[in-house]
Structures are given as C-alpha cells and as structure tokens.
Length: 331
Image 1 (tube, one colour):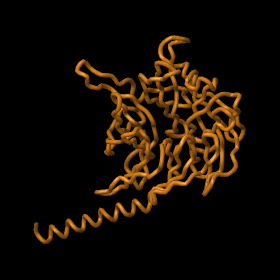
Image 2 (tube, helix red, strand yellow):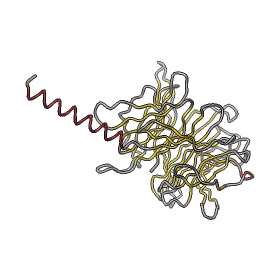
Image 3 (cartoon, one colour):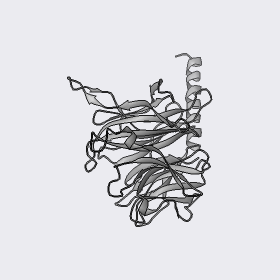
Image 4 (tube, helix red, strand yellow):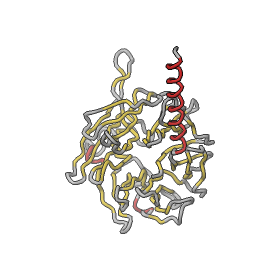
C-alpha cells in the first residue's frame, strides 16, 4: 500500500468514527414496557448512556405506551381498575397524574397510537374483558370528549359466527392524518391462540376501505422449506430527504425466522432492511441517528438494541434485567 493510499484509508476510518460518535451523541430516548420480575411497568431509556428509569411502580400492570407527536403526553394501558384501560398522562422527567380515557365497563383496550394532530388515539378494543381477542375492533378515542368511533371491525373480515378462524385486528399506526395501517391476524383458538396468518393492511379513513399490502400465511413446502411470510409489528418511517415515507414491519417465516422489511404505501415495493437478523425480534424503529429494534436472547427474553449510523458501528444492547417490549421513540 502506498503512503497516499494509507493516509486516505486513515482519513476514511476517522470520518467513520466521527459519524458513529455523533450518532451516539444524538441517540434517541425510548419508552418501553419493562418486566424485570412479574410486574409490567413503563420505563424511559436513554440510548446514549444505555440507562433506563422506571416511570411507573404501581402494583398494577402498565404497558404499551404511545407518545403524542409533540412528546408532551403519553397514553398507555393499565389494569389498575381490574381490566386493561387507556390512561393519559403528561410526560417529562416523570409522568403526571393519570387521567382515565375509558371505563372498565366498556371492555378491554390495547396498543394505542396517537393521531398526527395529537387530539385522539386509536386502539384495539374487545367488548368482553375475559375474551380479549374476540370481536376485536379498532376504535378512535377523542381525548377531549372521550367519545369513541369504531373504524375497523374484525367481523368485516370473518366468514361468519362460529365459522373459520378467529380474526383479530390489532397494532394500528398512522401513515398520515387520513390513513391507518394495522395487522389482521387469524387464530386457531382464542383460548390457546396460535397465529396461522398475519397480514398488513392500509385503511383510508375518507374512503372507509381497507387494502391489503403484504403478508399472509407462512407454510412449508414438500421439501420442508418455509414459504411466504406473516407480517407483524408495523411502524411508519417518516419521509427522508430523497425517500417518501414507508412502512417498516417484521416478516415472520416458519417458526422462528424474523426479518425486518419495508413496504411502500401502495404495497408494490418491498425491501429487506440491512439490519442483523440473528437475535432480531422487532419492531424496528427508524431514527436519524440509527435504528432501534427489539431483540430476543437464547432464553426467549425480548430486549432492546440500538445500531448507530456509520461504517463499523457496533450494536448497543440495553442492559435491562428482564423483558423489554413495546418500544416507542421519544420525539
């Protein structure tokens, strides 16, 4: 190697290290559900320092946080009333007083997502708290009036009462102010559920129409090779300088294989994300400083990792003493 080539290589290495260092300094904060023991609570993680702080310490379960677009409020699920309900709280260094958004008599709620204007949330709803995967729907809750509006019903995908698999609509997210995405799953048994199909849909609020984007069944051919994939854990990646907004999801193939992918809003363009697949669980969340994604270890315990941008960047794992689920980035 000539002297000129050597120094050029050194410059590239230094530039790469500077990019990684700046990405670490700009690393996002993240809310998540943590379960160090038997109780689920909300935690705030600083992925620059890899430190996590508990935001709730109640004897009840608190989970599935959703942050408002301005990052000043959080909606989450708590069973402090005896069944999973939605609560609203201000968000800062700590949580403010909890304000109930739903009543225990109405049913069970899960996986809220703030609308882009911050005035409402959409969440999965089941009318029977004892059968939380039956007769599900996606319901919009107005934060000011507490009024609800049903947007999508699982019954619209079902063959009929008592016929075929149980259909669940779940994991809603906002592509824009007029467009939702969600997962439609099919289960063989709600008492001991086994997912046989999971499909990503786009829903146009004005047209009132659901459009299939990707996913479905994962099966094995005659030679034992997995074919097709189920789609899960969707998230929206906002528009970048030269790229439009798209949808990030987890492609699940066979029994264990999970792969991070993206799909365009029309469903025509699908791509595999260049993230490590070993130990990948999902979801995958994009941030200008890098990717935040769920992992799973050999014991089957889910965790959280951050991969900064920059050549040669190493994955940074959050050292949390328990399960980490439902991550959401702080704006």
